[in-house]
Image 1 (cartoon, protein in one colour):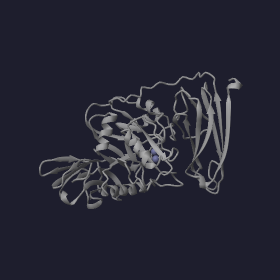
Image 2: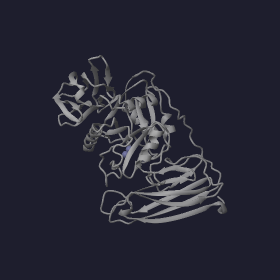
Image 3: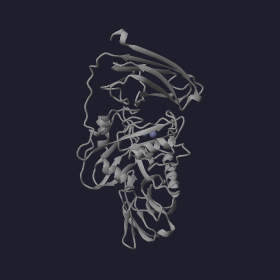
Length: 459
Ligand SMILES: [Zn+2]
Ligand SMILES: [Zn+2]
């Protein structure tokens, strides 16, 4: 490395609790011919004084053309940005000369600490000798047949704050017997080509991104587009514009874990946008990880939004970041989707339509039939009138309860056998939507269907 072509920049800063949920930009000039940008970052104290929680900071980067990516899990060895193989989370394309910006994102600074940080940037013009692995990131069909497929719509790897790489992640998920798994790392899409290359007969690896703001998280499922997630970094980039960019690209937009435990356990995890409840979101993740009390609150929130006239899809996501400890029973909820094939487009088409139920094990099929013979499955809309609602379930447990929910209220709750069928005759003139739940003897959820909708106004 020749010294006259190396540039270094050094920035320091201090943060207190009042800086939580703010970005601190530092800019630097990159000359033509730069081949690598090395970033070192450290802050202290790492763990908040007197607490088990750490102060939480990450870095994101803008090159002269826009967003370059995020360095989510800051490590001592630093990060590299270049045109061949950047640190996971950060895009790999040739370095553009001009003004670059590092955004120090103070997610959580806990009192009484004053956190000090040091940021060092080193530019190099040496030819790169690294070789990037090549992946076929095209979307392929894993099974051409229509049918019910079970899978996950939310997970993380080392491309953001997960602890495992993509082969470890997909090997674990294959071992769970899933038909499809979605990679949705925080604020980056750098893992998607490798992830999609894991698709094989009977196993579909799907793409997405979790837009993780300081006040709520969203899943954008479908494309490989790197969305802006940072509120107000660009003038006027409020939550509604951030959500609309996902809709405009045609991706499936889901509010993740809306009622999650928030500070200091999980910074920015609860949905707190008062002007986007639910905004232009198409779905709500009502079962995140295992069945926490906050999921019960999320399900209530979902029912409330439905009752206010929002036709939203209920989904689940393991939000898994690493292999869970063995032998600890955890009731994860999976999406069971009726799709035309096991392909990314068909699964997402079915999810958009609400052709799915969410389950920790049992099968739960909700259908409706009108006197005219018109039929519907979960997610569909029927006109008003008299209809018969049918529920078939199996693989449930002795003592489980079946609940009929109409317009958000429990209309009926009865203990049922592990398998069976139940019919109800309902007058749809008097209702807007209905769904069914299976719960255990403690009333914790086993499964919930997407609703059938009735009458005008649902689109
Ligand atoms: Zn999240
Ligand atoms: Zn997540």
